[in-house]
Length: 116
View 1 (cartoon, rainbow, N blue to C red):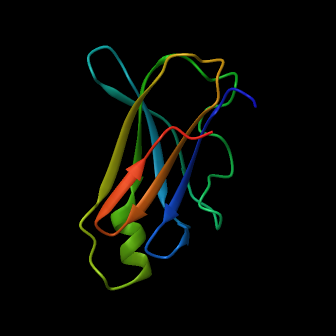
View 2 (view 1 turned 180 degrees about the vertical axis):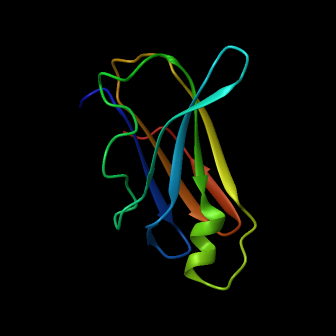
């Protein structure tokens, strides 16, 4: 598998992919300052159409993904959501590896892990 960064959002309350979640990737410098380097919106499979980082863009460092889940839930129902933006901060320590960061989502909680 190519060295790249990908994500996938599943809505456990709907038992399927979360379409329409805005995702922003930021790189953090040594002082913790964030620079936005990529963004996108999940498709009908809960994935972005392109990797957040391609093999050429992969480099070691600290990153964070921001998932705009509050807007996602407001667009789908009148049900309120406890979560607004879900931040996931992680480290790429080997830029030759594939990094996949899934988000399992519900209106009041989330889980993430390093996927394959």
